[in-house]
Amino acid sequence: MRAPFQEGGFPGPVKYGYLNVGRVEAGPAELVGRTVFSLYPHQTRFRVPVGAVTPVPTDVPAERAVLAGIVETALNALWDAPPRIGDRIAVVGAGLVGCCVAALLARFPGVKVQLVDVDPGREDIAEALGVAFANPVQATGDRDLVYHASATQDGLRRSIELLAPDGSVVDLSWYGDRQVTLPLGEFFHSRRLSLRSSQVGSVSPERRGRYTAADRLGLALDLLRDPVFDVLITGESEFDELPRVMGDIAAGVLPGLCHRIRYSSPHR
Image 1 (cartoon, rainbow, N blue to C red):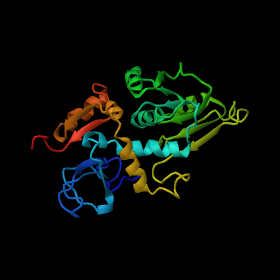
Image 2 (cartoon, one colour; image 1 turned 90 degrees about the vertical axis):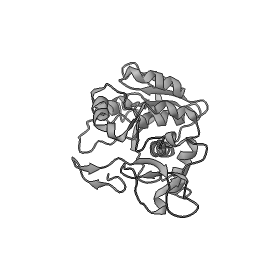
Image 3 (spheres, rainbow, N blue to C red; image 1 turned 135 degrees about the vertical axis):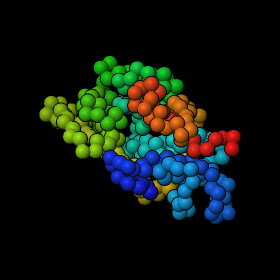
Image 4 (tube, rainbow, N blue to C red; image 1 turned 120 degrees about the horizontal axis):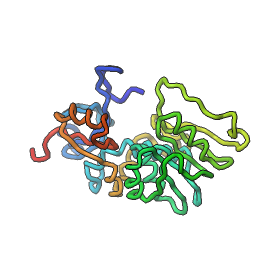
């Protein structure tokens, strides 16, 4: 699970952050001056191969384009388990990945989407995305499809409980070395439920013959033309403010859905 161009390793010191949008200062003539998206540990300037950057469409603001890697993850999940017209769907976990999944699902005709999270503050975001909201206890069951993105055992267990017979859970969470216990001896077999993983490290098998990873990222950037994604940006700070900002996010003083970091003043 090393990030591209990562330096060091966990628990630290490590340069791990990787969602960057910047302007090309030197390189091929067709890229110089272009705004591009890249995966690289956060710093003011860096040098990468040409293939490591993707031009941002001119009608996608750079500030929104930082979400490209997360939208790409959500896109891959929908390729892994495509929704169908009329499906009843839950997205469990209203973090950045779950919200991007919900934002894409809201575009599908005839589907009923419910975003599920323990934080009642995410209800406003669900409303802005155009989907329903519920806490885990009150979430509506009988779901044809559940996308799980809470990265918790309780969230995954609840996802399985919400399924209708023959339904499927798609797990986008990363658990590291944590053990997860699931109720596979209760109704899992009698309802013929399915559990599968989705991971952005490779293009979904359903699309590998038609899309490269670069094609998928380009499509994610195209999807970011929709201004609805701006609701997922919950703050912005200068790099020098990070020690305080990280502490405030960890303490719950600041919302931490997607907090952008600037590496130079916009007036420079």
